[in-house]
Image 1: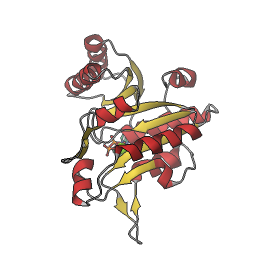
Image 2: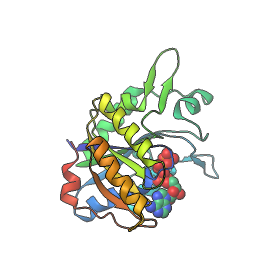
Image 3: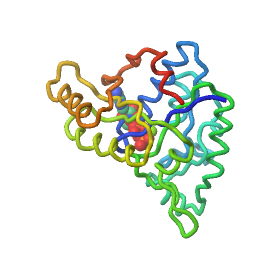
Image 4: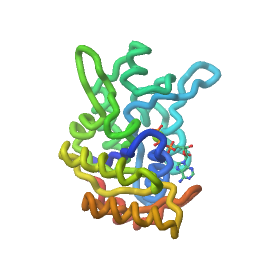
Length: 228
Ligand SMILES: Nc1ncnc2c1ncn2[C@@H]1O[C@H](COP(=O)(O)OP(=O)(O)OP(=O)(O)O)[C@@H](O)[C@H]1O
Ligand SMILES: [Mg+2]
């Protein structure tokens, strides 16, 4: 049975997919059997034949060279670029947590190190109807995953990163580290952002990712040790 980690971010579009691809690539380049899973993607493109293309999964699959088939990478894909709970409601195709758990377990049987990308930030509703209320942090708790937080390196990140880390803390979700994206070496404010996040939360920044990076600057053995 493999080990997993959850990749969340301070919000949507912060670079979860971009950084996840570099994480999985780093592990695979070091000879590890690393895979990817995402429970729900919204804003998927439509192919000519009408099938939905879950861009995040296809991107990581390609960049990291996983070679997995789409249906094993993502449980739910929606066309509408809205929160999964709303996309599900619009399409009358509600997210079933038991399917997510089964798909996740199946992926864990196949991969030694499974990286699970979240949707949006840590408060992202997956299902909100009269039968079930499921937010993404509930899913992370249920799957007993630790988390890595992707945050932008720039202005505003102290607030959004610390709030995200505090939320993980109150939900008893272990945080394995922060990765700062769009990092510009030598930038005074970004250096200070890093220091402030570490000092306010006690959580370490484990990597910094520059614009257009093709490699994650981290020891693959250390990275692998964060999975549980
Ligand atoms: N370090 C980087 N260098 C260059 N482009 C980047 C970098 N980080 C993110 N991007 C680009 O920014 C956009 C948003 O990033 P990404 O898709 O990874 O965000 P996300 O957090 O996964 O979003 P979502 O919530 O939709 O899953 C993408 O076009 C991505 O290629
Ligand atoms: Mg993404």
